Length: 322
Ligand code: XIL
Image (cartoon, rainbow, N blue to C red; front, side):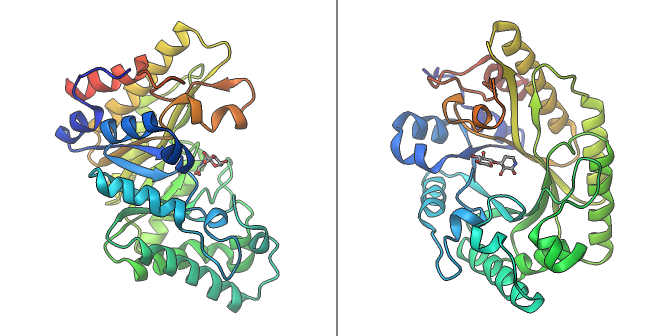
């Protein structure tokens, strides 16, 4: 079980950083150990799925806020900040929406209405929103989505304006994966956010998801340079969905590699001019999305199936305390 050392969230707070976790609403409801670890170790929460379009919108007429409300309430009770995730994303859309067939005007009505309703419900309680998630493919081109089809490449501009209308105090983020270091995809993100800023669009930060593999090389200097170029535009950067997956069978050397990678990314974040949050994509390996998504892989988080802290957890504590 967890030791009586200073919790991660307190160590991070002393360094001016929020350490967060994606929260599985079901585990939060059913698993007392899950609640204990979350409240003790993390100062920030993201709904892993509950604030996505599909889960929130079973039909055009109906919103299902229960899970998202429960996560936000738990966070409030335990002094945790909340990141909102995600308003505009090609994935996990409800069928009735993904099917399309909306006119331009109807589409605007629908998406603007969705963003207004969701963002204003959590106004003052969600400090940062992933307004647009994963708009680019790995080569840096626009990813196909109902939003792109309906509105063209102006859709991020529209979405950021709508979110800002609903909560002028929330920090608004563009979020993506495989755009953590300098590469074609992060170049595309950089070009887009610079264009948005030039046009006066209310965007305040870039989220680097940081879904990594323990067996791959990580280039901290390149991640640092990437963060710096966003900071130089006046934007905040947050690590939004970190996990470092291993291949089965998991072994000691994988755990140590993983710990080293967590440590290196945390060091980069601490050294950056503005890297204000470090969020991991889940709490314990038991509920992680990785085994369902990447066959034969898993074990990417800070706590194991039983809720015991792993070497990666110790590594983060060490860096934060040093
Ligand atoms: C994942 C969730 O973890 C899964 O439970 C769900 O089935 C699919 O979505 N990038 C994101 C996250 O922005 O929303 C994704 O979350 C993981 C990849």
